[in-house]
Length: 220
Image 1 (spheres, rainbow, N blue to C red):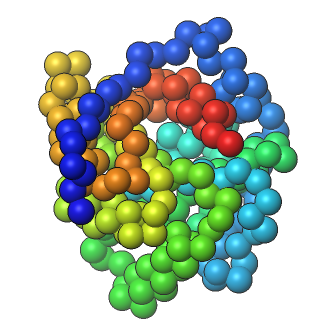
Image 2 (spheres, rainbow, N blue to C red):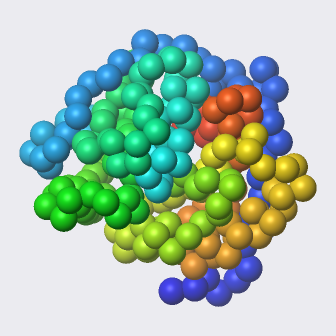
C-alpha cells in the first residue's frame, strides 16, 4: 500500500573521520566468517544485532562487504552472477552478525536451487527476531528494477526494515545522483518499512563506506 504522504528522500554527506568514530570502532574489531547456511535449522542463535545485505546478482555485494569490513577477501567476489548459494554469516566481534544473502534475479539458476533459496529466504525474513535492518543494494548504473520491487514487497510483507544502498557510484556521473534519488524515492515510497535515507557507495573509491559503517553502529 502506498504511503499517504510524499517521502523526502535524502543522501547524507560523507562523514568525517571524527563523525565516524562509532562506525570505525565497530569495524575495528575482529571480523570472521562464521558459516554458510542452507537450511533454516542451521541458522545461528539470534543473540546479537544482525544486519544483512541483498540485491540483484552481480550488484557488488561481496565487494561492498569487503570494503565495509576493510578485509580484502572476507566475502568472495566473482564475475559470475548467482555464485552465492548460501546465507553467509560473518561475526563482528561479539556484538553483531553481518549477513550476505544470495543474489536474486539470476534467470539461469536451476529451478530446484531457486526454489530452495526462496524457501530459506522466506523463513529467514519471517522469523529472524535479531534482524535490525536489510540493506538493499542497487546498481547506480541501472537503478531499481521490477525484481528489486518484488524483493522490497517481500520485506514489506514481513515488516522488515530496509535501507537502499546504491553501489558502483564511480561508474556514474555526479549529476546523475539527483535522478537516482528520484528513482529511489518512487521505489521506497510504496513500502512503509523503507527508510528515506539512501547511501551512495563505491567499493573502488570507498565513498559512502563511513556512512554505512556508522548506520550499522547506531542500530540497537
